[in-house]
Length: 169
Image (tube, rainbow, N blue to C red; front, side, top):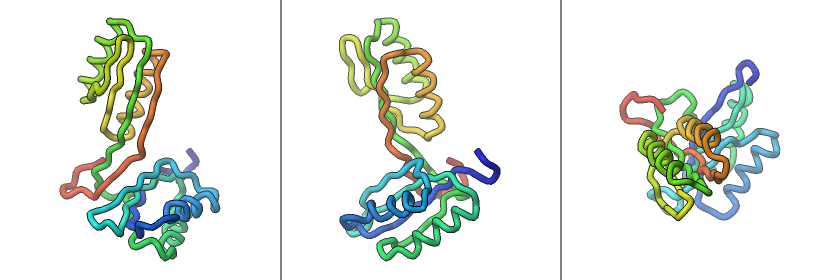
């Protein structure tokens, strides 16, 4: 990564309307900003959605992104999570096919170590669910890719909320 480039996190409260996600992602693509992670869901108010976005940028570019988001009519509030204590998790599914009985034992041990759940089980396959930080999910994917050849990985983007206590991500 270039000097000054780091992962930045933004949380947005936006109007829950058709086309808002497209406008926000269009703002990023139109300016050639990459979205590393993007999640969106309805809040306690059904007219408001909350987005969690990760992007890699320098300080100047990130300030520009925040200003542009704040100017959008559909954006209610922009929260910069970059240097805030946040509770953040990502969901990860890993399906491992063509497992031997010994492979399954190893996968159950990996699941136990990483506090994952085995959510589906077949004669020669296993489906694992991990809900943890993106960094821990990166480590799990790397480990399982090294040990098993026939895998399928699906990840959701991270979601986050400001921490009540001073705990880190």
